[in-house]
Length: 87
Image 1: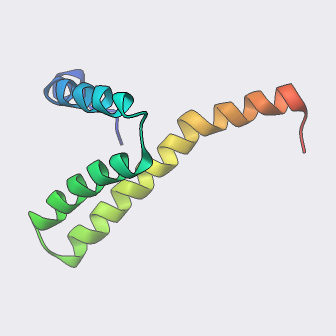
Image 2: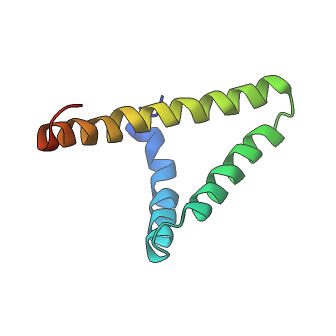
């Protein structure tokens, strides 16, 4: 779950904002974002090379994917239903 305490966020936000700024300068190419995500996942797995850690990384990615869909795409789809009508 990405809803960590504000005090915990503070230690990451500066680095994340720098990454976002760099990605925006390059128009957010998907391969660059994939590279960043892959490096983070690889580092987490390499710190504890076990099958269960790999499963944990996959679970984190799946939950992040679902949260992105829930928070970003679902509202967009609802907006388009209102704009264009339901199926």
